[in-house]
Image: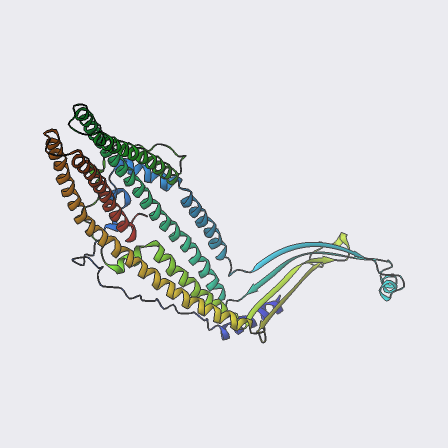
Length: 470
């Protein structure tokens, strides 16, 4: 035991003499960020993305759909399983610094040839023609983490776990936004269907008046045909809207993890409300808030640790192995203590000399991969800033478009009334009435579409800023 102790002390001194742990410093890439987002009047530090999704979306029906989506969406569930698997690998990585210990039991009987030297020796010294060997021993193997290789391996596992966690948050932001977009699209289709049915009533009335005028000789059969075609066109539109509505309901049902079916709505598009203060905040805050950008930064941290591992593989490795237990050539005295006890300790420094340039290649490739991930991180930040800017400009533009579209609807609705009065008085022809109705229908459908686009732009801004995972 004293000799074993001396060996351990010797290697501990050797370890202390070479333990210049190679801790690879991480230099955080600083992407070029604007001080404020484009199309913002002031630099407000507050951001709408700081709101939890339950605060951002106040509609109880939409809140219920989002809750179902977060709980049942299969993409999210798969992501959570990835987190669980990565967490298990992270737990295992914490034990990398400990030695490997195994236990084995073996029994062996050998019978050499009687004409061999071993066979004759056995008969001479043991008085038997075979030899037995019984062994029960613990085996230990341990590598000292001189250059930080094991520590970097643990760091890789930790970064991979955090990546799956951020990936889950990123998927949730996408699911929340997609559910909200689908819900607002349904409200738009509800409104457009309501508009189309109202226009169908106008077309039916126009057709009725035209038929009476034709019967009295005040118009031609062409007028009846045109009025009929206008009515049929509206009926076709209603069928298309109902089809689109069913498809959207099916898509939304799948998003929330349910079989395709009806989606209940208790409000109309005009009753929807989203936060009026849609401040974007500062770009630097957005970078730290967006899960996909954070995930890309974690990929960079992982590649930095992999460079450390590749670098450590080029340096000497200190390994200590030991085994001990009981051994005997007779089964009846196998476990006689202390006579059957045995043990050995072996330690050594191994320096790679020639590995066909494999180690240097691994290091260079790891460094190149790290440089690629720096560029990918910068690209992810740039894309994020671009998405926020797009959502901001869309929202500002759609405000104006909504106002103009609303004014156009009012004008064209008044035009329908005027055209009908003039038509009944014989001062306008049927084409003017049909044109007025068609223009009004398209204008109202367009207004509903613009309102939905504006709601979508606000949701896009919320997601682009990193909102939706809280």
